[in-house]
Every structure is written in structure tokens, then in C-alpha cells.
Length: 327
Image (tube, rainbow, N blue to C red):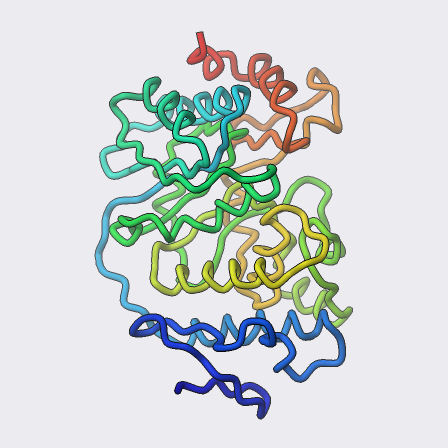
């Protein structure tokens, strides 16, 4: 039986695949770690799982295709937002011949409606059982590596439906990025101290850790857009995060809390690179007419995750050409 040794603790593992293992005793996994508090246990677990994966040098072949993926349930408003998002990509991209699209959903009807609007796109779907609510549905974002063709792609870009892409998506895919890292950005007014908010953490970091992240310029990030390599390593990291979500029984903010905790604690997030290409605006905090948008960038018009009507109103006002696809 394979054994994982962490801080002199021996932990039994069960082999799932050639290079994939899981804890043999799930229920006691966290308790194996030498820590003073429950949150220390969780952070030690995040650290250990990350190190197990990152120590392997997974080969990356010369793949040329890239993937944009989305998650949405059956909501008329969010399906309309998604159509506008995809149209903005098509409208501003000179060449989509090496770009595929994937919709992760719990309702096949959502995919059918979107694909009818874009019959010429290489758009595929991955369907999971119906989620009980929006929070549970958000976890589908973590399941992208369950898509059967995922490893034919070089890079993966996730986009929320409430994004207007004002530039060629290939600008993003042409960026030089590293394996074992996630690339995103922070929202307006979000400083390093927000690392300990429930929106970006399921535990609390020490002052020393916050100072360390500040030195590295790793900010708490908005998980509505992120870029990563389509590698075996990243697939293992996402498996680790899903494992942690299954263990965690306390408060969290959608999947964003888990992504931030895992990648930020392990200093494996880059929150600077995409700042040159995206801006995030919380439209619920402002009157739409008072917003000053930098439309030279791609716009994520975030807000209440369950309020699609305000976002459609914003889109109609600021990006009528994208909104026009709904006519």
C-alpha cells in the first residue's frame, strides 16, 4: 500500500490510476495533519495535496487548440447573457479555427438553445445532474477536467456569462503561462487584507502569510475568469479542490472560496497578468449611467450572482451590439 509521509505522519493512500491516488480513509484525512486548529489542518491539507502534484513534471506536448468554457443552468436570463458573451467573442476574433467552446450545465436545454444561436461554432457540452441551488451548481466549474477531450487542448479559459469580450480572445491564449498556476485578477477596491474574507478564503491566514502574499503580489481573485494550462497537473489540482469541497462543512462563497484558498495559500496564483486584459465592475454598487468603463479591456460586469435582469439592462445600455444577438 502506498504511504504519504507528512511531518512524520504516515497516511495510507489508495491507488486510482498510474499516477493518481486518494486518501484511504476520507473521514479522518484532515485529522492526520499535525496542526493546532481546524483551519491549520485544512491549510496543511491544501499544502500537502498541492506539493504531491507539483513535484511531478508532467509532459506538455505541442497542442495547438484552446478551449473556452462556461457554466450555466437553465435560466432564461443567464442563457441570454451567455449568448451575448459568446457573440462578443465571435465578433472580435479574427480566427477561431483553433478555439473550441464547452458548456458545463445541469440542463441540456441550455446547451440546445445556445447551440442554435451559434450553429457554426465548435460548441460541446458536459451535462451533470441537476443542482439543488446556485451554490451547488457553481461547483460544476471545477469539473472541466472530466470532459473526455480535455487533454487535446493547450490552454483553458473560463468565462462567466456576464462578460463582454472586447478584444480578440487569442490575445489571452497567446500569453505565456506556467503549469501548476491559475491566472485571474482581483476586483475593484480589493486589497490584500481581503484574503481573509469569506469570499476568498474558507479559513484565516496569519499576518505573516498575508505579508508573504503581499510581497509576492498575489491578491484575492475573482473566479469569474481564469486561465490555465490543460495539463495532467492542473487536472490533479482541481481533483484536490473538489476533495476539499467534499470535506468542508462550513461557510463558503461559491467555488471562489475554495479556488482562492487552494491556489493562494500555495502561492500558485497570478493575479497580475490578466489585469492588462480584463476589468471587473460591480454594477449592483453603482447606477449604470454613472459607471466609467474602460472598454479597451474585456469587461466583467459582476454583481448579484442570481440577478440576471440588472446585468441584461447593463449590457443593453453599454454594449447594444452584443445585446443585439438576442433580437
